[in-house]
Length: 186
Image 1 (tube, rainbow, N blue to C red):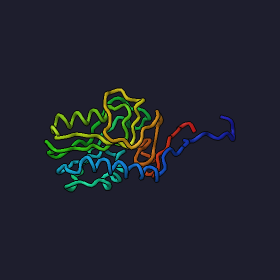
Image 2: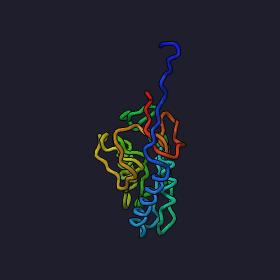
Image 3: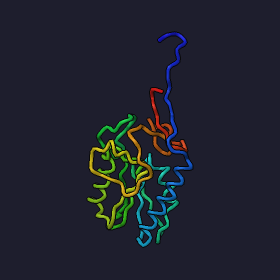
Image 4: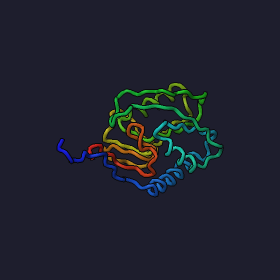
C-alpha cells in the first residue's frame, strides 16, 4: 500500500426511500386485509431478525375480523456472509399449537428460497394449517434455487446485496429507514 493512499470503505446506495416503502406497505396491508377480512384468528409469524421492521409496519396495516395472534421464529441461511450458505439454521423454532389455523408468514427477503421453503414445509407438516401464505418485503427471483413464490411481495429486486429496513450485513445497518445496496468494495 502506498503511503497516503486511502482504502475504500463500503458504499451504500439508496434503492427505496422510507416514504416509498411505507406507501407500498399500506398497499400490501389493504390487499392482505381484503383477503383475510372473514378469517377467524389469523396467526402471523415473523421470521427474525430481518423481518422485524417489515413485520411491525405490516401488521399495523392489517384489518381483520379478530385480533391477530403474532408469533416469531428465528431462521437464517446467511450468517455473516453476503450469500446464502445453502444450509438453513433454526436457532429458535418454538411455536404454540397453531394446528388447523390460517397462517401468514412474514419474511424479509426471498433469495435462494431455501429458508422460506424450509419453514413453509415445516408449518405444513407440523400444523396442517387451514391456509398458509407468505408475505415478503423483498423478492429476488434471479437467485432462486428452490421452487417457492410469495403470495404478497413488497418489492422485486435484482441480484444486489441490500441492507436497511431490517436487513443487515453481519448484524449491522438494520436500523436504516430506507433500503440500500451495499458494496463492500466501495
